Length: 313
Ligand code: HEC
Ligand SMILES: [Cu+2]
Image (cartoon, rainbow, N blue to C red):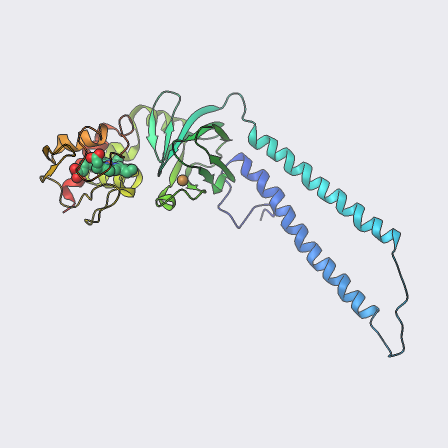
């Protein structure tokens, strides 16, 4: 058993996490030690200096220089040690290495968008190669969000009008969970992203052809996945309830009215247009707030959405 492994948080999955856990667990053990040490001293004093007879008078003691020096200087060195240990880790955590790969992160209600060096963009799924330093340059399009990866022990606010950075070197292959850690409205708790830590080959394939899922899943399932993972669910319901956007229940094949009063029919082309140019036809009674998904969804994902909407009866 590694005593400096943190059992209160998910398994450490990036270089930085080990540093945090080491110091964190050190402080936990130190606290436990002093809890019992001080407790024992108190019990000792209570017993040794208890009042033994009714006539006994407490001697008048003002202070004890030797003891005061001991209980000031020893803790001073202990906390200085903790400070420098933490400061070293802090500097390491906030200064990315020069050769790190840069990914631009855009947060908006309620999705995370990632843009890779080659221009590829994804929503809520971040792919990174194993054991390579990655630097995230983050900003928000609306309110303050916070990018939090428990297994990397990293959290940083994502702010409109300013860039914040975060860097890590993933050390475990697999999937890591990202949360938004700053309450940002109704969809806050759905503002989840996943970090896929790929082998170099998997990463190359991802850049070329997209996700394994995107390539292989049946269209209808893929559409459902897009609905759940790419933010559609925060505005569109499947059961007929009106959200920020119209429900998808039973809309396939129906005719609706645009804001300008012109009728339209929900078919494949209409859905495709709604996703890529949502403002081209705005459904009557709704605000034109749907963001465009141009460049964010692959062709196959749009086909998936169409199949999925067909199936929502
Ligand atoms: C921020 C909220 C929001 C998000 C996120 C959102 N939409 Fe929308 N959507 C709307 C609104 C509002 C409308 C109606 C106004 C309009 O047509 O622009 C709409 C309209 C639509 C329509 C036309 C529906 C109809 O009844 O005619 C489709 C199709 C659609 N969205 C698909 C999607 C898909 C697919 C996604 C996810 C990839 C998505 N939307 C994400 C708000 C949103
Ligand atoms: Cu958020």
